[in-house]
Image (cartoon, one colour):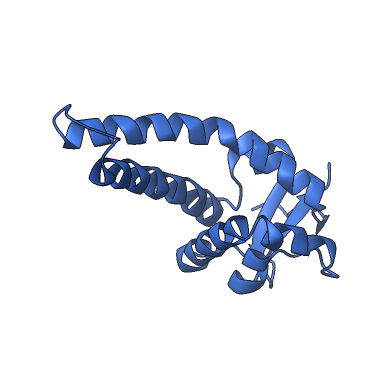
Length: 146
């Protein structure tokens, strides 16, 4: 295998740009989630009921988690991260395994629920890490052009 290109910690602005880019495939997956919910209910999905809302949100959450966990575990990059030449690695610079990716996803949700505080933490952390990086012992690197 080729030697990886030198890398530096990714600045928050590039991480947010990658996240914005990742909204494109996520929107497609959210449509799939709605179709799955319709299929499960035999076309009688009522999103005005708590059960209907919960079903759709469950599928949305599951497909979103799958997108990130599989992307981070297999190649260390989502589509948005590829576009901005970012890669997720563990603190030793190795590939991140599924359980850590799952933990990272869950803590990222908490970060978002806290009005993005977990993301903004990267601005005060000396190594530019977010809450989810700290919890999962990961870091996001910017790959240099070769």
